[in-house]
Length: 181
Ligand SMILES: [Zn+2]
Image (cartoon, rainbow, N blue to C red):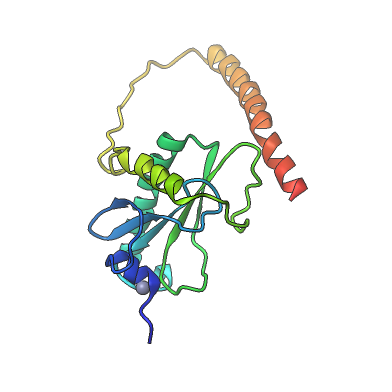
């Protein structure tokens, strides 16, 4: 029986462009990316479905968040999709899929053309960004005084209007892309 490809990547029997690694997971640049900087987050332990090892699956999701932050900072995509699809390889994994402006945001697009040199540059860029694990990120507690009721109402109204406008702007390219897909 052939060894699982993802196990071989995780144990470094197959050479890959690693962008992040910790005790439980290894994250690599996808060799047939659907978008620039698409990464695969792979647990080092072999299992197929997330519920076969919830603990390791949780660590894999955590690594996916770290990789997504690295991709976001280094490549500045419009947004990032996360996907865990059961595909040909029966080894649990999470795809971190950056989406750029004017790009059809479908995860099963055809691979994009990137040469080896550019792939190495992208991997270096993502790898070079330092991010903290979600647990290490401290959240500052802000204590605010209670504002008066009428001010709250006005602020709420303004916030909703502003929010609607921003949402409409952002949704436009997204909707358009799907219509043309
Ligand atoms: Zn495997």
